[in-house]
Structure formats: C-alpha cells, structure tokens
Length: 248
Image (cartoon, rainbow, N blue to C red; front, side, top):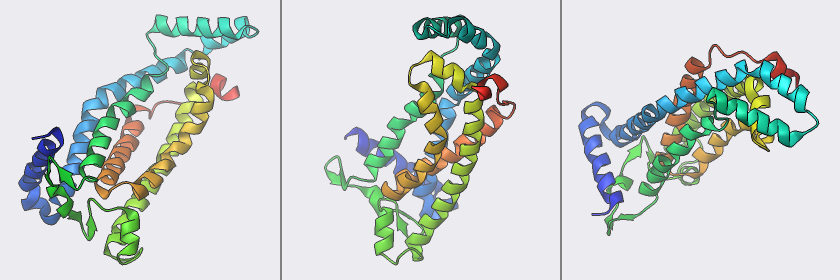
C-alpha cells in the first residue's frame, strides 16, 4: 500500500465516522477538519511570528538611528540591522514559516483528488462531492455542467463569495501589519521591501487558486485562509502602524 492510498483510506474512515452528522458531505467535512488540524499544528509558529513582528515594530527607534548613522553605506546598514535582530532574537523571515509548512498538506490534498488511481487501484475519493460539485472536479467542469448557476456552479459561487470576503479582510490587515514593520524587514533582507509591498495583494490570488485546483484542494485553501483571517485578527489586533515605518 502506497502512502497516498493509505492516507486516502484514513480520509475515508474519518469521513465514515462523520457521515451520521454530515451525510453526503462527510468527505468535504473531513477535509475541512483536516485543514483545521494542520493550522492548529502550525499555530505556535504563527504566534512566534506575531511576537517577532511586534518586536520589530518596537525596534523602530533603534533602526532609525542606524539609518541615520549608516545611511550612506547600505552594506554596513544591513549588517548592523541584522546584528540588532540577532541580538533581539528576531528573524525577519519567521512569518513565512507557517505558510511554507502548510504546502505539503495542500499538495497532498491536490494529489489525492487529481489522481484517478492510488496504489494501482481506482481512487475511492473521487466518487464524493460537496452538494452537486464533485470533490475531484474543477470550476471549468462546473461551468460545463449546468453553468454558473447550476448545482455545481452555485457551490463555487459560495466559495468565491467567502474567499472574496476573507481576502478583503486579509488585505486590510496585511497592509496595516506591513506598515508597522516593512522598513525593518526591507533593511534586514535585500529585496524584502518590494515583496512586502506586494504581499497584501496576494490575498486575492486565492480566488484564482480556488478556480483552477480540484474542489477538495480548494476547500483546503478556503478553510486555511479563513483560519488565517481569524488568527491575524486575534494575534495582531493590538498592532498599530509605526509612524517611523509609515513615514519612509
């Protein structure tokens, strides 16, 4: 038995346990709960990233002094900034870890619902659906089977509406967070400033992802981004944009 077929069996058994409550949507419910378990597992890293970002915000006055002292020597400024972060135990890239560690789980879900066979046998998960939308199907399949307002199309419309709401929330929160610490991160890692300016817009890439991946993987993405919105609200609710960072 391959790893993927073994995991598929585990998903099926978990779905069977959920069937008395969720009935035909038990596999979809299993995916949502699996996603929440993954997010709960990486939550300590998210909390650590939040602490790091708040610490970088508090370092704004010291960073301003370093810019004043080494402004004409970018290499020396970068080295001094890195030394300050090291002294305070801060990593400017720590916020990326929670997202990176979720990628294997996403690709696992993508593979499970993209493969017609697992371990040399027919994939049993492809027979399940969420409403009228097969979990192994994609948005273009829904458009070809009843159109946008058909049974499967309505499932995607509901997902798109949820993703758009969450993306808008994440966009606003991310802009606020980047205003608080973007200057420090940009100086600590070359090219980071440009990436941080683009990061708020990445929330809306979820809409594209949901449209092109299998519905099961889309459920993973939607659940994960919704968790992120709630997590960011509670972890960063006391973060205010730094005047020093906003002025640069």
